[in-house]
Length: 252
Image 1 (cartoon, rainbow, N blue to C red):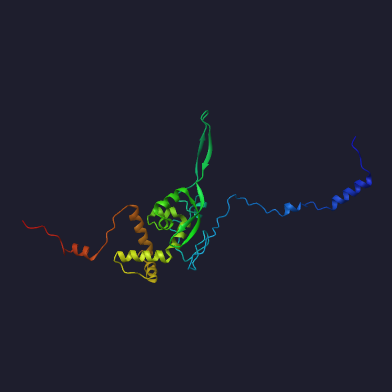
Image 2 (cartoon, rainbow, N blue to C red):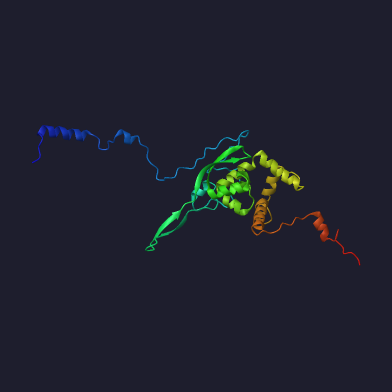
């Protein structure tokens, strides 16, 4: 038979338990922060300041009205790739098949992603970003981060993603890249153009209502995708069509 307590002792214990709050927790549990539902840390790159420039490296998600929108829009699948240089990598799904009973078990393969600091020659700083190993090999093959971002083929622009498009716009504002584009125009025999003139030509609407710059970019992307040859209309070509400077066969 279990031991019994005196009646006054039981009454004092009941009174003390009634006055104690029911939701009282230890102090160490109250100071513990709540854990988020996601196990992936948020992507907030702490980018360094660009020397001799007030224009910072853009954020991965902050709105930037002065920057042209990404032509292909945000990626609807694998949203993590919108904040890094992932190329065309996505999560792959498949099966594990046992050798004995051939039992299939669903599994997935995630891209090999790393946090890296890539050197930008035009900005003069290291850019922090998430990047896959395949994109790292492409960057080395292209000759650096700037050459990779300045690729002009449509597939390269698709591989950049929204974050790569922001980095591309930022390095195009640097004096080194502007001087490079000006030298390319001079090598082609084209006169230099001012920024206001370029913006005015791009915003000038065509007869069908679309902007001239957007229509020209769409036509150029289509020709690059089809690997078509570009025909430059020059005065000499127009004169050849009119019969001027036409090559004549030697008389026999």
